[in-house]
Length: 184
Image (cartoon, rainbow, N blue to C red):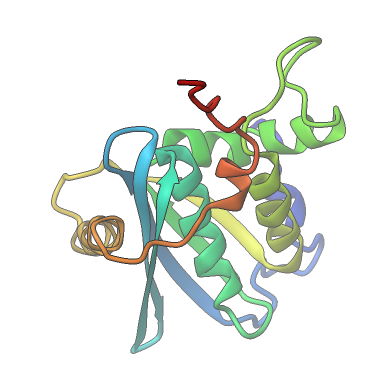
């Protein structure tokens, strides 16, 4: 089995990977109306018989940024170190973590190769710091395939993207040059 980034975070030799930590399930989803365009994220957190839903929207962003931000928002909502399974329909997110790509990009100063810059380093930094705090594994789920919690996360994301007074995604809008003004 290939040693992925998430596998390295489980304590060695304990006999139990969880070590008595609270076990949490997070269903996360991001969306974008046009891409780029208005976007939103939705999160469903489940722990024992407790449930929490989180969502947020941005006036101009990308789908991949919202997928990342959904996972970040879910993990940031945890009050203490936990053992977490994050379910996402984003192969970009799941593969980048589980295959160790995000850690490699970070180790190479956010480069995917000699010339290619990794996309969304601001969000990857936040996510990787959260992965160091918790024991996390990511599981890909097929989107729009009838999984009730994934469908709910999607509803939350779409609702947030369609909202009024959307926030500014400074990591996206701040990284793009402003359109040139018209002279006449």
